[in-house]
Image 1 (cartoon, helix red, strand yellow):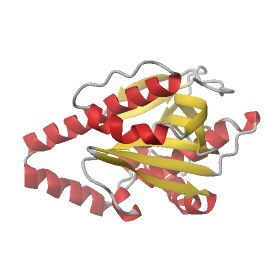
Image 2 (tube, helix red, strand yellow):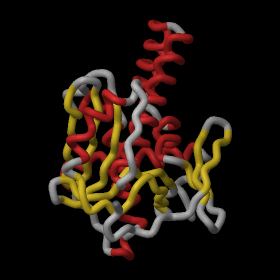
Image 3 (cartoon, one colour):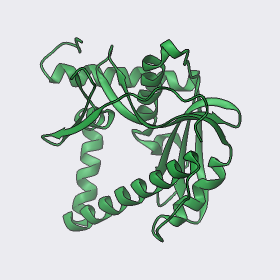
Image 4 (tube, helix red, strand yellow):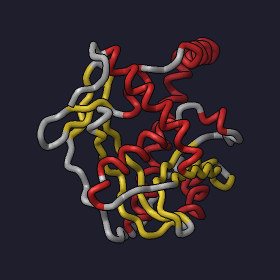
Length: 231
């Protein structure tokens, strides 16, 4: 159940030419975090993705990506149900990831926001946040992921820390009038038949990723024809 919930932001989502946008009640449209990350992906990441698709074949790549997306969506739904106090109903494909994540969720309390859109009007982006709550008593932003194998290091997380920093910055920006100033973030990655892998970030460890994210946003808007975003 939510405790002292933050007011959710009404929004609509739309896709255009493969990009996702969120629209606020005033009609302002901002690109999603994932759209900006995809549009500004470094050449080496693009090459690595192309090489993987060539290695496994286009059809297999589509199947693998689709399965990963479905298990991620399914796990997110059950995590949200659990944190809202609803009954969890897992499919067999999702159950191993749910069981991996459940012990982490038992350390979550004071849930203030779930699966809600936030807008960063100064920088010009938006995104859907998984959770704002306390983990082991520390207020933080929470992001849930799934993987077939452990990441083991920050280097193997690829864009996940940038995504985490983007949501962290947007929550602090969007809810500053409510006194929100999160200093920590949790990235929890559910694994089949293993405990979830946890990456815990404090403000000092988030800041380098936050600066990288700001650069990616500025690069995105420059490619859209402006020097930087102008609200």
